Amino acid sequence: MPARGLGVVYTSPMDLSDADDALLVPALADEVRVLGETLLDGDLEEARFRAGLLATWGGMLGLTAVERAARAMCQALHPAEGPPGAGVGTAYAALMGAVEGLLSP
Image (cartoon, rainbow, N blue to C red; front, side, top):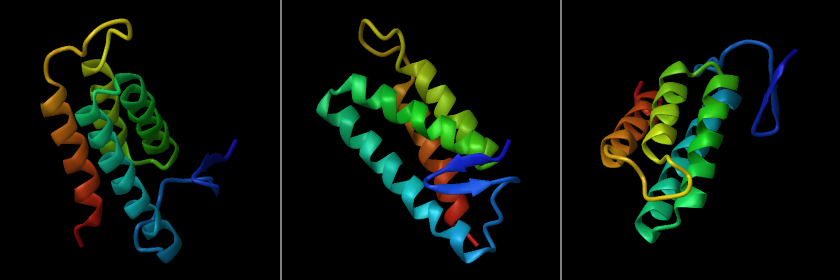
């Protein structure tokens, strides 16, 4: 079954040389920015949601580095009932780095 991400159907991993696929990278970067803002605002429920969303998109788009980093972010933000675990800052930096790596030529 084809994957769906950001309103586009994918049957294989993203080809960042394709103009349409390359437009998705800034959208991912913006999601990471918003995730950071939610962390600074202390809205952990929204941060958990956005980290999960990024992990899902990374998987659907074949961006394994983004998927792994977002899943690590999810782990750092749990348990859901309390404050986040250790390593949230490190996990966020890794996620940011994974997406920034897509922006580099």
